[in-house]
Length: 60
Image 1 (cartoon, one colour):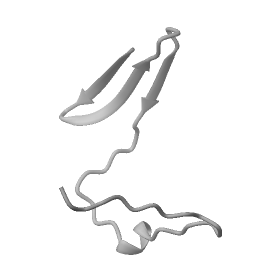
Image 2 (cartoon, one colour):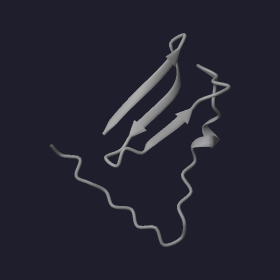
Image 3 (cartoon, rainbow, N blue to C red):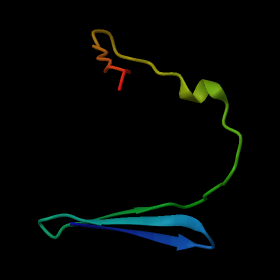
Image 4 (cartoon, rainbow, N blue to C red):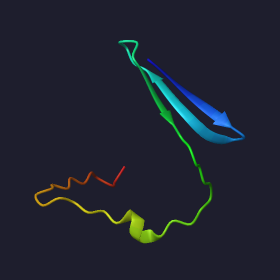
């Protein structure tokens, strides 16, 4: 398996993955905007009814 990243002028433009079956998955990024302000309401977590939340231990 492999993963490759393609950059243009220090901006990520391509992620390419080669899996164990030699299949290639390419993700191309277009119209990239950097350092823009994103409103906090874009990050509201909405869980479907019946979702279980499992929390791990926070001590060491």
